[in-house]
Image (cartoon, rainbow, N blue to C red; front, side):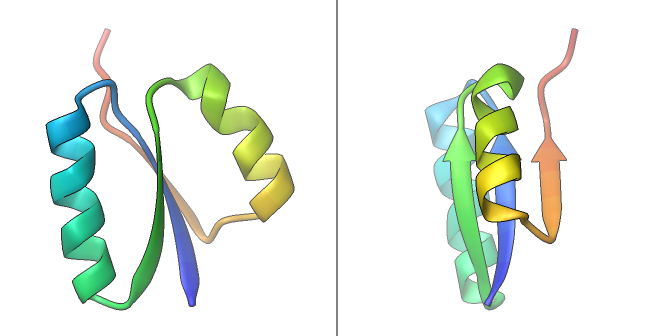
Length: 55
């Protein structure tokens, strides 16, 4: 299964994206901020990282 890391501080947005990606056959991993995503990217080698945070 293709792993996708979702970086978003909004829990509701993460749940929505996770639900949609799961239905599409992906394995979503949600994290709240980019710093938290860095170890996950190293450990899991995901196929995609979605960063929906804005500055």
